[in-house]
Length: 469
Ligand code: NAD
Image 1: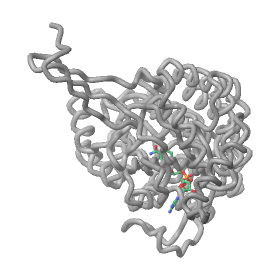
Image 2: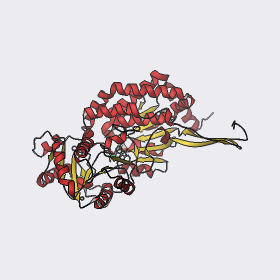
Image 3: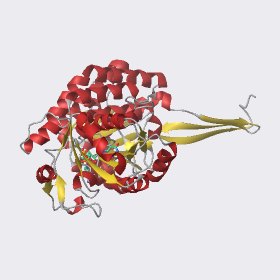
Image 4: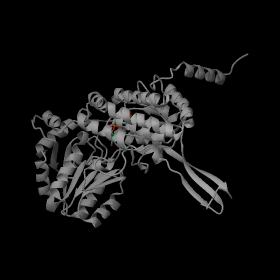
């Protein structure tokens, strides 16, 4: 008897699955294997009670808190970006404030014609691509939300953060094993690449793609032909007007802009200050241990922060110069950046004044370098902020006591996140109300993602009965 190719493939798949140890930690040599293991685990997850899903999530939260320092050290050592104390805060935040199954809600209508429910159901296997800037935070946050929604997930992490990402995936599976004897709720490959990402994006078993990263990644996911959630780049301006408490504004702006050395996509990237208070704001920022750089010093920094890049795909809009960020400068401390240009100063942030078109102001640097643009009045400040946000509709912040102005700014900027009179990280639930996420779907409009985002809606109708009013 001759077996068909499809039958042989099915037999190989089943034998391979049996050979996989039940305590697999989710890391595979190929993307195909990672997807197939997550698919198989998905069948088990579908049969779990919601209570059991929650038990696994509690295990992931506890493991994250326990390993938060290790994960933070690993990320800083591997990527050379950010700082350990802030990364510990970020991991703790993810563990404590990422929503679990309580986010999955049912909507019901009951009346003369019976009972109709809309329930949130899993997509199945989700393909998630994660950044180097918050590698483990994103993996843990995505897994909690996706599992709460009843899904399993395959990650294609940033190659520059592979060790940290693999550690996070292994930690998650160990927690799931301990809680419920399940493995492979999250899987990945041991050597992620653009190629493994492409395999994921076109694989028939991937029902939904979730992209957290820069514009190139989000473009690729949205062109894939699959449903995609795009959490892309931002360039958050922070507007300060003459009604603001300037001392507080300066402290909040510098706290936000220096958090994890300015790596978060929501962090303040440019200041827009009205003329009347611009000098005073600058003085308060200098009092917060900022280094007020001269034009010559900024010009020197510019030569090291940017490198020539002739890749066509780097020119993503009309502002783009044929230059790319020097990855050795991204996520470095202000003191380290100053050292490169021969200045010894233990400053928290480098501040300077410039035109909105200055590349340190117009481009997303992810470094504690904050340029201030001066405008004649509030209306001009809103216009400048809108230009600086470049239509990403990601994040914008404001310090003002005038509610009408705040409303005007919020409506005009139309961003997924708008923080008023607080550091940007308040938006993540850090010193602000609300839940935490590390995937802010600015590009595709879901906003701050949570378990509910990773579900599809299904309507279930019972006609002429089950209404018991
Ligand atoms: P990056 O875009 O370099 O990489 C992100 C991921 O996408 C990596 O896994 C990378 O390998 C992959 N990738 C990159 N280009 C790709 C392409 N063309 N096709 C397929 N995969 C591709 O991002 P990064 O430097 O690690 O992270 C910083 C960027 O991500 C910043 O722009 C930041 O604003 C953004 N970010 C956004 C959010 C959000 O929630 N909106 C969160 C974190 C980071």
